[in-house]
Length: 171
Image (cartoon, rainbow, N blue to C red; front, top):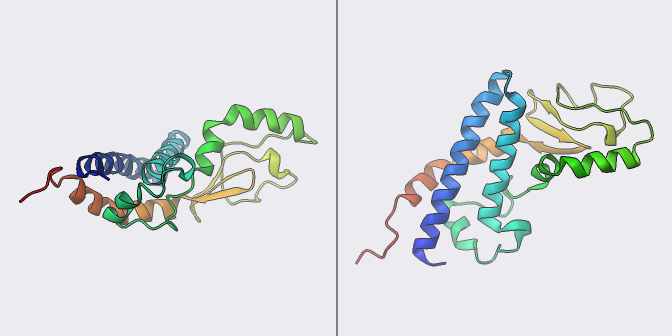
């Protein structure tokens, strides 16, 4: 990867990480903006994933220098874009729910532990956030926000330093 392109990618990762950390502050307060903040955090985490691996992992090999420069392994919790896909493609999820749910119950934007609402089929359970565990659930898929934030807190100082380095070779 060319050095200038690497620096541009690092700056983009830095900005998305900053957004994740700001969103986490709002989520941690469980204020009235918790769901927009969760959506923003999930979207920014997916953007970091796309920057680090490419959409659907299609650029993983060529983005290896970027991941190496900020110490991100393929096992990073930032790798997955599955939860963002649930949020971003809500229209498709609603159509699938309507076509496949036997009872058409609809539980969405709930706060509390998974399974707290009894009698709900997995397909009827949309967005649920458990602040104690940090798990975000959608249709039985979970995404741990605390793990995402911990990874961002770990790499953010690194990407700040790396992104400010010159984008030319210093003799």
